[in-house]
Image (cartoon, rainbow, N blue to C red; front, side, top):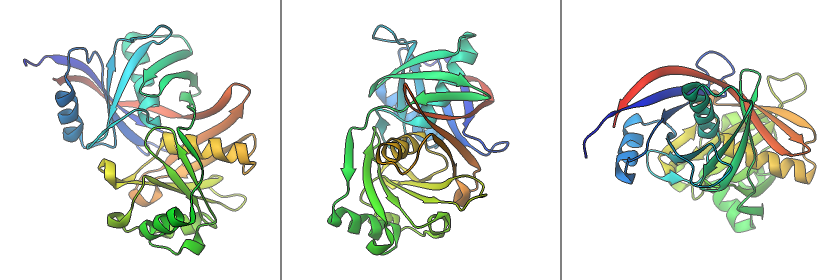
Length: 277
């Protein structure tokens, strides 16, 4: 198939400082691209995710989004959702404060925030406590004892997340996971003491999807927030720092509102041009 130049953006998402977030590659006007072309470009960018913006196929959506890691296609992912909304609005000149994204989990509402965008957390596909056997496997992959996991919960909103709560942020940062033994896409969260850089530290490991450690992860934070608010582990809102161990400086803002759980972060175009696809 012949190639053509397609509008392209690379957007930094959730940065707590300049270039501190998670980049996403966004191909705008992806109509006519086949699956293999999308997969090949996602492998080539070698980012956590690459997205492709298509015309919507259902009423009420502004655009349809396909999301690829270097290894797999995902039905939903958070930082690509925010980065793609930013790129779409910038490319099309959309001035409104609301967008609706169509993707593999259905319709995802988005809204502008100060300096970025926020998405409404989608419903969990799988929830509930991990079994003792699953906790043992989670701990094995994280390189810790099962007794170090204070709680573990399935919070799958697309990528397959299970999350482990550790005693504090330092325990999260000290992890040296054994990725070869990791059975599930695994998130880890621990609280900071009062006055810390955020309320929680989070890390995300997804070696099975071609991403050993994700710098900053919207879907995981959405899943954690859904669990934390429903269980009373958090109320109102909180902040998350993520990416510390991989050289990022991510900042995620989480709120519980009348219309759902919202995950917000800064978004900034770093590269703009065309991709020959």
